[in-house]
Image 1 (tube, rainbow, N blue to C red):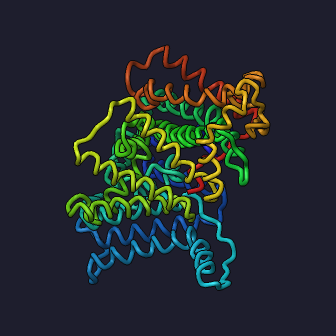
Image 2 (cartoon, one colour; image 1 turned 120 degrees about the vertical axis):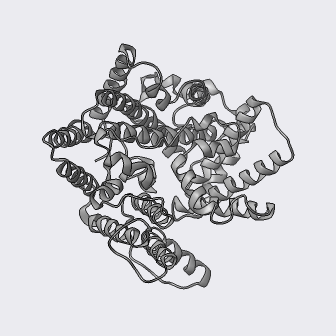
Image 3 (tube, helix red, strand yellow; image 1 turned 180 degrees about the vertical axis):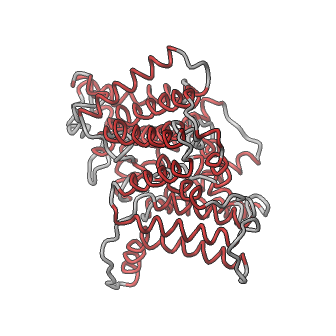
Length: 493
């Protein structure tokens, strides 16, 4: 069950909503919270019931440890050093994550280096384990520092399992959510929140079904192992993935925010027009903002942050982003991607220290092109495939050998485009132009317009928004009914 599926939108979400508020209206508030926890566990288990015990065991373990090391919680106390217990509990969480996510990667690299033949049966990554593990590690650290002050097990279970964020984030802080789960204000139906929730959910649904899923076909074809590329096809492939990833993940976050708003819960925003960024530091303040915040608070600052020598600061930046890259998956391609961003942040810091700057249009272009290039390493399955696309992007000779107006869909490897996505409304003869030139137009559209959060929260909730919401929702739902929407990209991380 995914947010963009008919069963979620037309069955699951309405049932959970009406039962929850019916229980609250009957003043069965604890039952309402238990209902949300049960519904969230069902949402998780809909994919596979196999890892439900792992999720529940993780929740119980971390809640008990959080209570034990907090200076505020009452009940369980330990005689051992709180710092030691914190370190061991974090190690246990990371070991569990490491086993599922990195064991085969480690074994494969060990075999490659040592010439050994160790083998583990293929390990299936439990859905959402990276997100709920990181969320609970943050809870443990906040508990140790005394920043987490509320210790009700049902509220904590709801904090971890709340279905809008459970599978792919955003990564939450205990202190920003528990007050909302405790508040009596959230127990009654709030029609303004319902309208805003449906509005931003509709934007996210349209992003996912009509835009991201269309770009996905071209990105998958362009990044197919061994695919050959010229200038136009390599740029089309890279830009397709750049926009697929943004519209897919930001669309998911919009739907997560919208679904949570139905229950009067505000999730933190995760995207703030990242492709408008004028430098790489600004990009990481706008892209996957809760992950950036997490890496800053729980990795970069503990390493020393900015409170040390310049050389150490540069090391801290590189270490943070290399580990951040590795967090995305067990692949050297993610490590390369993280190292490129870490290196870019080091260069940006040196640039600023020298007092240098550039005009905003040029700054945007340099930043966007760098991000587009690094996404190639993020998406490609091997160095060879990445270099094949990169070499095509600078193969200017192929421009003279091709007639852009006559480029066929086969030439661009887009023959697999399905019939139910946005750009297939174009005649096939126009497809090449849409691919080669439409990407740049979309980039300017993204930069020029408000993002979904701004459109939702700014201005009045009038008929204009209602009409736009109805159009976006209807078009996206029609496409959802006609074809099967792909899973969200970040479900794989």
